[in-house]
Image 1: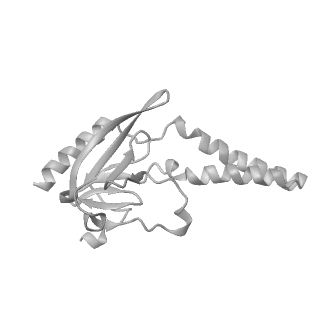
Image 2: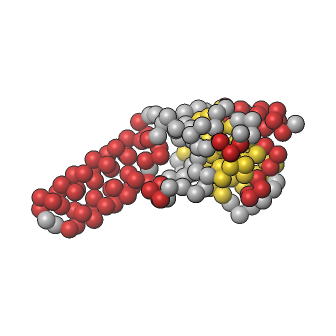
Image 3: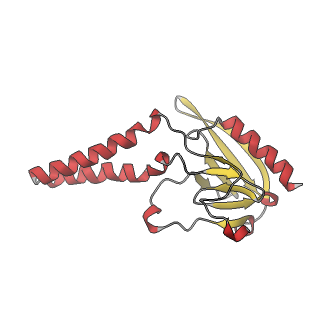
Length: 176
């Protein structure tokens, strides 16, 4: 059963990126890339192509923010799953914290999952190996050297405290 789990069909509680106006710049830079490519074709000037490459690179990096129907993080009976990371088993989690981080003029919420086992034994399913066309895209997670998985929960479609509460409730239930 566990071998059948992949990023597309994990089941359970899941959270996806929210659909709102904050991702409007991704669409704008895609349009700018097209405009700059057209300008390079019409004028024959290579500097337009450089600008098009920059705009296309920004768009490509942020494409995962537009995948609102795809589960990004969540949990099921086996553990917590994170897109492009894997499925962390419940017993390998030491604690789950929601931390507020002040960045310039705003507060960002970060979900911190501290592991009590090495990553290789903590993962039920390892999804870190991505297709080559997704290598340079945005990842929803960062791993620190202290065996902590950090997830910025601001772009998701549910409030940070609700995500944290649900993960804590499921962690307490399934690890016992």
